[in-house]
Figure 1 (cartoon, rainbow, N blue to C red):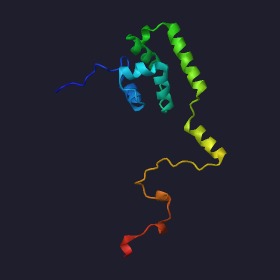
Figure 2 (cartoon, rainbow, N blue to C red):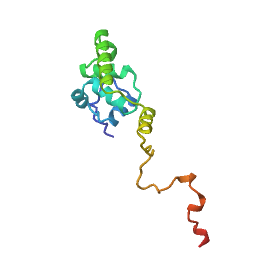
Figure 3 (cartoon, helix red, strand yellow):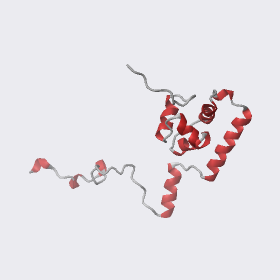
Figure 4 (tube, helix red, strand yellow):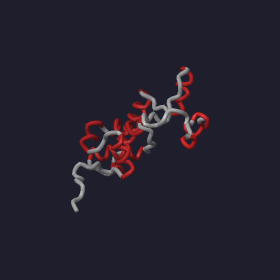
Length: 137
């Protein structure tokens, strides 16, 4: 059985963080190097995941080809400051904050699923009279 090609695997990243990164389009070491550690970290946060600062350090360590714990404290502080600046420039809003803004604008809340294959109506809260009963035909 042939193994997967790990030649471009991101160093310092475990399976959970790797899944988060894949979901935001950071799949390889090259992807990470193009974005940089702060932008990759912010993409994960903006996607709704809750990464710790260890992910930020791990991404920086991956670019420098060292373990994240080996990064100097000054560099860690600079990474945290850069992430804080990035968040301040474009604040991450929770879904509840987004809902409040929609309500204040008078907009309709967006349905959780906009699946075109899902039948119209309110599902189990729908009036039983509105559902056609084939057993009576």
